[in-house]
Amino acid sequence: MEQNTLPGNFSENFVKKITNRLILILVFFLIAVLIVIVYVFFQNQQLQINNEVLQVEISPLQQINSVDINDPLYIPKSIYDVYLTKKADVVMLGDSITYNVDWNELFGNKYSIINRGIPGDSTEKMLNRMYYIYKLDPEICFIMAGVNDFLEEKKPEEVFENYKKIIIQLKEHDIMPIVQSTLYLLPLHEDFINKNIIYFASSICSTIHYASSRKRN
Image (cartoon, rainbow, N blue to C red):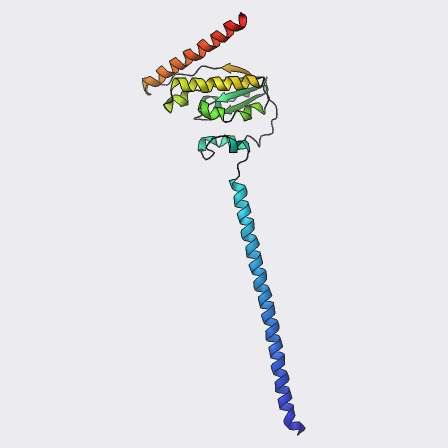
């Protein structure tokens, strides 16, 4: 009788061991799957966060201003907040003519001069980045602007109003504005652009002359 029961007990114990091991393997498998799911979930969350961070503008002021930060001409602006210079004697505000000059070398490093020229810049875009002038707290700001406005077929009156706003805002921040001439274009351009420049320049000169005469009186 005992010899007949041994195979049955052995078979039953063997099945239990196999079942327990299969259950254990299944548990480990489910745990591994759960770990992989959690890992993938957090990786996706981190990737989403990184993408959101990359889409945030460097300066909060860019959210206020109506400047197209995707404009390739505005790449220099995106790193202004990274520069370590906190104070300057003079700031050069302008377009490509300003941008292409090493002003410190030109003046022999006698003064702290910061270049804030951007190629293709217009008076409207300059108004939208005046913060980067104020934060340097300069005594003087040289302005060269207008020609790109006329290339964009802006009216002289509109450009003149933008120019006045730039000057007024600089004065409100105790910065002396120095107006530079808006240069003529080469003959290959339409003559009406140079005519607009002449009209614009005469408006600027008349305003400056009127303001200086009132000051003397």
